[in-house]
Image: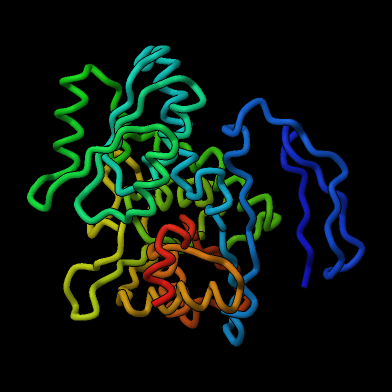
Length: 323
């Protein structure tokens, strides 16, 4: 197995190359961050050699749970706030209101805590209590919707009433741009410019669109796969944070090479496999993406390098995973 080592950036960690694939990595130096927000990004790309054993492709997982807020949404939370500050839409002491199934709420709450904003996170009915506890711990206010309320509509109304900034992660093109600027470049650099396929499930669709576009610009032949989970009875998926629709037109998602349907049970089984075979705790969207990659892998050319986006940590769902 080839050991991949890279310098992160001048403001972040630098590593000394290992003498062998099994040698422990040592730190040459450790940068002191000005805030936890500087730790967002540069997440590990891990070869999934156990889960992918016997496949004709090389399978890699982009472990976004290693962001400080525990998910890929940290990237867009920081970028959307940065852009809003530059445009004067978000000023010192201001309020942020956003609709979120949990992870974007965590990212925005983290940014708000560091920069002195007040965050209000509007969540749909049935959101994981673990996610809500994290948002509250970061000092944000939560508005939990009832079963008959549309959490996006509620967030829009609250933002108008309080004259607050609403990032609008579902339509704001800065969402995919955050991944095109960071996640795509990291994957490309980590694999030395050899990326053949990207597999992801969609929440807002920002990750699939932004990473897909960033990689497609570098490799026009990139095979882009969207995984669509469905309930075990064939109805709408019960997994949190995954939308049945694809990315909006404003995200300019590249043309897909395939759409793969995965049952919720298979997604949960993939979550369990990652935890027990690779030691990586992930959530349902990651489980769905992995299950879809495993299902689609044999249709790809032998030797292809396939990257699966693992958006968040399984600690948000560990109760269901343990059952």
